[in-house]
Image 1 (cartoon, rainbow, N blue to C red):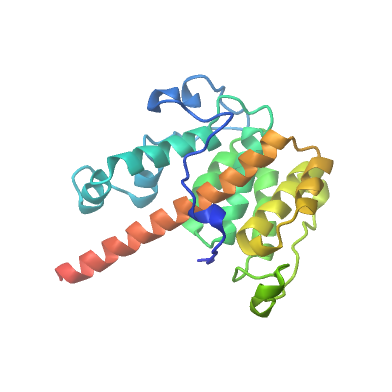
Image 2 (cartoon, rainbow, N blue to C red):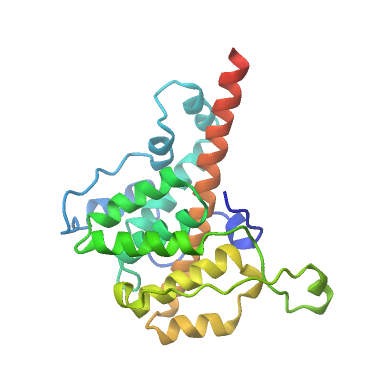
Length: 242
């Protein structure tokens, strides 16, 4: 799994601003139209439980039940960011493409499959899935790396390649710019600059869309870590029982 230390990945995953729910029953699931690309995968009541295969009353269910607010907030964040009421600045297809790409960078194949299946159900999504997965595999690496701008941290710099999408025709300039920025946040956060935001604006992203993109990348890092950590805990407890 990719290791990152930027502040965005450790922040509270519950988003604020446009699209954030006020209460658990504020999910976009009640109003959003289904995509037109094929059979739409059913949305689980709790995505983390679904990814872990949690069953009512089992050990993982008991562990998650011990922190009900954290459990509820993780699901609310998923619904706000991946199933939004207002997707005018950042379409659902774009969100699923970014999610498939970012989770692939983290090497979480089971979580990647969850998002890729939903992206593939979008209109024209199957071709986008192939392009996104190829880009994710090409951009994967150990991180974080990059060069610090602060003189006092220069000794900790670890130069590395700046990722650029190769098949821009398949993804379009707007989505290509989003994937490049997501890669920057995941693997080269120390090189995030105002110029990086300008590239998104030039590609057609609004300020609101850019904020939501950053929130999505942070949430995905959180979700991957929760799933990985709980799965490892289940393995340890299972081995201890024997």
